[in-house]
Length: 350
Image 1 (cartoon, one colour):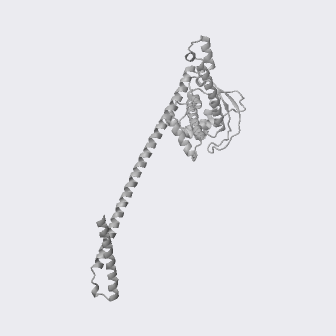
Image 2 (cartoon, one colour; image 1 turned 60 degrees about the horizontal axis):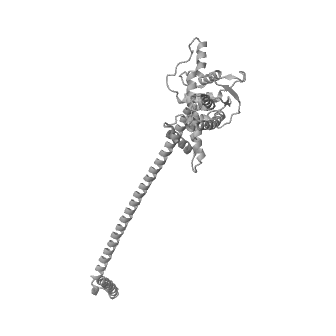
Image 3 (cartoon, helix red, strand yellow; image 1 turned 90 degrees about the vertical axis):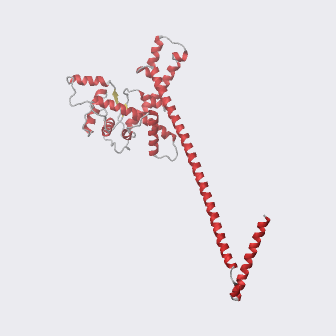
């Protein structure tokens, strides 16, 4: 995962093979468009804008500066333009970076229902943000899928990926609507796979540079050797190898902090569960004690009722009864007297 995340720290544009179909249905997101391979030559966005302004006398007609942040429908229109705009066979194979983005801008302005007019440079900048953040979220989502936790639904995987993104990046992922459009696109997934492979190779190159660096060997080396290191290092093309290494270390530190927070949260949750279990057990024990007391009271009440009935039997005047009734109550009185004598004897012995 560190290999995947580290590659998106750079804000530069990428060279890649673009696959698309002009008739792709972005709302279905389950079709597989045919592959049409086109080589897109990258050029600097700012120089392209300068050339456009020079051709129009220093003014951009029909274009206004961005007055507010991109809305969700604008992001969706931009993703649609990225997926559907590719090289027109009538233009030729070597389509320039400027003409490619001009076609994307035209497509965007055609399908966008938002009244805000976006310049070419603002679309390029916004797409760079979408590309970087969405690719990073794809890495977290792939990590969750790779864990293959049993009983986890698709919604659970997305929620876990969102939590991991917020925990490591320090801010929530706000481009889920872009991810839903791009996730099943062959063009997007092809670019993502190439960037993954590129990031793997880049990390290996940086590792070689650090092994041969002055800090690792204790030798400064010649100026020619240092220049060679910078030329062979992927980070040297943007700033320096040390800057690229710092990015990798920062990502590793962020991941370690996230793991520590997850572990602390797990321990705290376990302690809370144990506390709740103890409270539940105490309540159950209290409930049992109350039931025992209620049983004692009920037993005592039954004994009192029994004694009351026996007292009534013992106080009956059997002389006024008929012979057979008198015999019955005489036997009952004898049984009561015998039990009383037996109980008194047991009490004396104790």
